[in-house]
Length: 326
Image 1: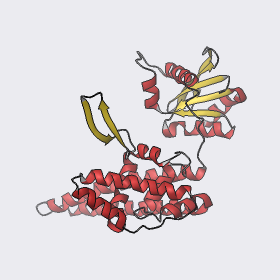
Image 2: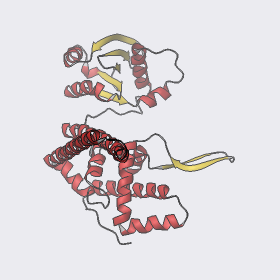
Image 3: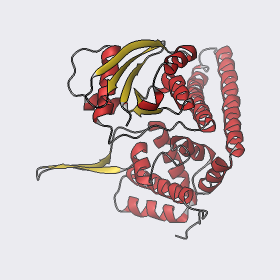
């Protein structure tokens, strides 16, 4: 790690920073910078980039500009998990942005052997992620409107709601058009990159994995560079089961963890449902486990886990997916 570590607490309009020496954790400088392209660029120009590492919490779009500008000058920077940082700092009394910047820098100095510098994904991957998020948002709104439409069609038998029904149908049609446009844009981005296209074609041939599932896996894994193996990705999705026991008296059920990417897990569950309908081997496995007394959702989780293993297998090797006989 560099001689200096700059902890950054990001907010919408500004960010607080605190620079510590790596050797003795003493404070070198503190300040507040505008979270704008001009403000960040001028601040970076006055820093010794060669000897400074930057560290911040992963705050989504609020920190996107800073991360991009740091990447442009080849600076070493870290994106920290906010929950991990909160648990590591222990009991804290009081909170300000300035104190948080110091805590981020101090945590980075103490854990420099455990964390790795962040590598900003390509522009294509970043755009794919934004489009996928927008699609998921529009799908959610569309489902809400469709449920409302069903209810209003029933109420229309006793109350005249024709105008409301017409308006809701118009919005649903508009949303579906936008969702289709997002999907077309994502496919165009996939086709514009040979690396993305190669992995997309491989994993979309896995039975049960459709275009949306394939693109979601590519964006979440940064085209399979973010996770070293399928098990870690399964943990991220919330598919990997863990034992819960302590000593000889406490023995809980083996279950998945509540910290997970819920949207990704839902997409993989839909893919698993499709797989057990069209893949003879997975269908036989699913039916056998259900007959043994396993809960259907537990078996479906296991099938989704198998899909993740298959997705990573075909993405990491040159051979295409081969349909297995039951």
